[in-house]
Image (cartoon, rainbow, N blue to C red):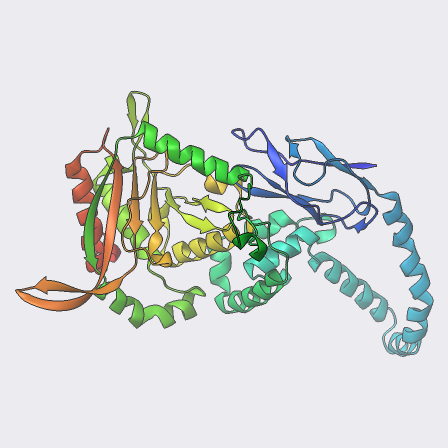
Length: 441
């Protein structure tokens, strides 16, 4: 018997919850096929089959609380070995009969060439074949197997090979092919069963009278609640506001969005500009990129920007590492990838760890104004809202401009009002004159 164990969790996570088994006891499983998903207070992890065979026993049922390394199921690999030899033995005579005339003719024309060619074809096909977990990653990322070099046994593509290929250079090499493959991957993903939603199911029978329904919080929701209360109770949060004329940015985006997408294989949004503007302000006022550690202030010499993403399972904040070194295309690509995988619950733990500053875009839901809560141990967060045409006064005249209200919440323990206000003004000026972001002035 082969044991199926809970994968390694992060150092800060001690327990996890099993969601829903995708196979029943007695059913056949393939190597690396996803058997169940495990929810921690940060991410949802896939548990692949460590061997092919029959799922002999489910040790831990749905909803069980487990720890890293705990055995949750048993696989009997004997059935896989028995089944492996039968199809080849059964189909070999038929295959030989079907191909014999052509094979004899080809061999007569070029002795030895047919055998060598067949072996080469078989080896190439085997080498290019991705493992099940890798195939899923390929579909998610919009990559073809031919774009990834396999390092597994016999040259097969592993999950690690796909993750290594998901670098900006790999995407830039073939944006058109990646876009087409991504569309195919999206269709495949749409057919995949969604993760369980944390919302209570809507039953029309419960809408009459005065019913109540008790639903337990998911681990992710519990963690979000804990962090928000921690932020409110440990930091002296204050929020300053400003308004931005988005006209120049909208005009710039409209002028180049088609060429940008054609060149880079990703749409040009506004978030890359907000990230660049925030980084520019953080360089001028480093205390907003700092954090409090006891009685010390820790100034960070790097810019890891968290992007708040709302998903059906709760709020998560994946990190753009070294955002100051990323191009506009790289930022847009990573944000789009984070948004997709957050909905699927496929973000990795290291992608949610750390961060020196965060951006929350409530505008995608239609928010006009809000006071975002700091993500501890960070000291500031930028809130972006919906852009709407509003009357403003310019040179004594009332004109209509597309306006976005920005909100900067900051920890008043280490950030004074002067630095907070001036940093938000710096963000406003950069967005109203986007050329400054390219010239870094």
